[in-house]
Length: 255
Ligand SMILES: O=C[C@H](O)COP(=O)(O)O
Image 1 (cartoon, rainbow, N blue to C red):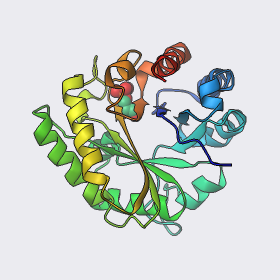
Image 2 (image 1 turned 90 degrees about the horizontal axis):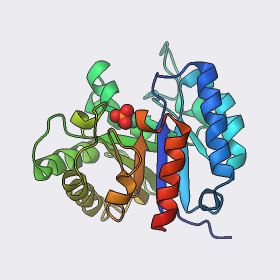
Image 3 (image 1 turned 120 degrees about the vertical axis):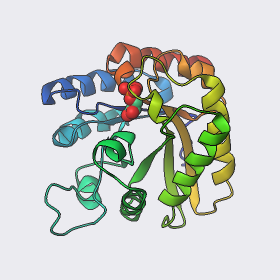
């Protein structure tokens, strides 16, 4: 049977906001939303949740029956070795992750993740069958044209070692819009995401490409951006399951 390609991809990272128990409670609420939602069940809306590392196995157990994908917030550049504190892509796959965040702005800014590291982590995810949620975005607020150039440059660098047949979720997250009161304006997001898609659609190595927006995204934004993005990458404003439910309602109204 042919798998339906999702129209929308909606992901949530809990970052380091939640305790273990709160993460499990959130996962149970998301499982409830997903299992009662025909769009998720039918594959038209793809949902993913990215919890803290220790919660991943339990969250997989909770979410797997409802088809919600689970990811990790980071991954090692290497598949094994003397790398204390790192978590490898093979182990993430073993415990049920199907995707992994790479190059989030907080990793780049607070933990010194360079573009070379982002490139190696992207390659590690792809060679181990994990979809990278490749986070890119300009540091300072400026024109959409300048942002698009910078983001495309970051993507080309990150994908330098991507093999043929790669599935990638690009999360366009302007750094200045993360943790802010509001998302970037639609007049900024739409041209950047359009330019990203145009730049990458000729890349024959990419078997599947999704371009989603993150950075203070919340209810209402999908409706404003629909047609220009494949979905949203959510943080704080979807940590209340009711908010995620209302975003799923928006998706339903758009389909
Ligand atoms: O991982 C998600 C993004 O960084 C957005 O987070 P935020 O919506 O809390 O700004």
